[in-house]
Image (cartoon, rainbow, N blue to C red):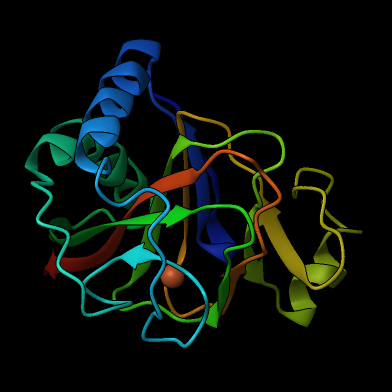
Length: 196
Ligand SMILES: [Fe+2]
């Protein structure tokens, strides 16, 4: 399990195994059957359906334990790169679904960092974009291993099976989807309780 990690920016990427990817897709297709194509006003005021306890008042009634059984080890592995102390995790999972034309305006999440798992998307699905500081823009000229960055944001264009970690307190957004099929991500707001 390799987590690519950029320490200073607190951003990480990983991919689940092929069988984990297929298992999660089966879960997602069953769990989101009643949500696909449905639109509602989210708490952040955009034309976006989010079955999310933090972004809207809709309860999705999804049992996230089975997702956590797969994704938890990736989250632990990411946090292991941030601290040598023992820690516990508080995880708030939710599902975001974007059909054509739907987007998420710039917002912050709760927690220390946000994990996004790309369950379903294609080449016309939007990236998740995270605002960059001026420092980041300077550093990309200095360090050749920093990811390619265009403009003012780090744009993570996931493919199914990808995981993307970023600080919850960084402004982030998702541009309007141009895809004919839905983009479905499983998200966790992650709070780390460090035992010092
Ligand atoms: Fe978010």
